[in-house]
Image (cartoon, rainbow, N blue to C red; front, side):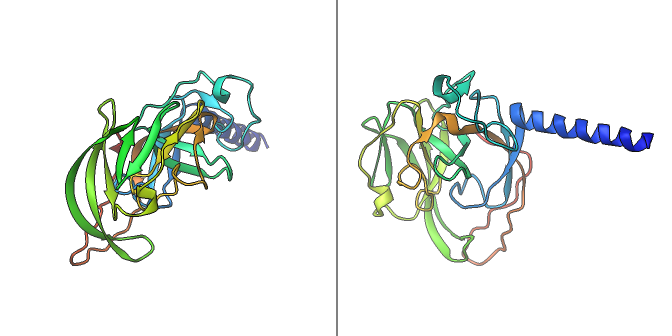
Length: 238
């Protein structure tokens, strides 16, 4: 009986410590979709820091808290920087999503023929290559890859299938105070702030910042004429 009580005490203590660490320090998240290709692949397991933007109602590991009557709904709040890959709770469904921060409060965001325009100025973009790959849904697709450099100097890769789709030709989005404009790096395959289904993301919905790919379960069979992303382990994210 004494041994059982000791093991229970150790188990409960370990569970509590894990919950605390996942709430205030680090946690892992799984990538289920292709919205962040080429940066992230389906099956990637991310490690995220929970302290970068302060703590809000979605910070706890296993449950959500009521709304807090503090600035932006967060304790020790700090805004992300443009280019950060953030983890957040969907404002309508509560689903955990991973996207890149493009617009901050007060920014004006627009896309024209696939080109990102921030506050009236086209964002610097450099063509890298054209290639084809097989989507997770099974169909091959040809894309153009660009290196996009946001104001402040942060550079990341994006891919485009077309410059003529509605999501690549938008009106001007004015980011409200206390909100963010987020997008996927896979610009033609991302349900992000360009769509009413998500819209602007409240700062209070932030969960953490993606720091690295812990490991990848991405499976890709080499095929003639198609690129095949490799698996990555302990790979830092910019």
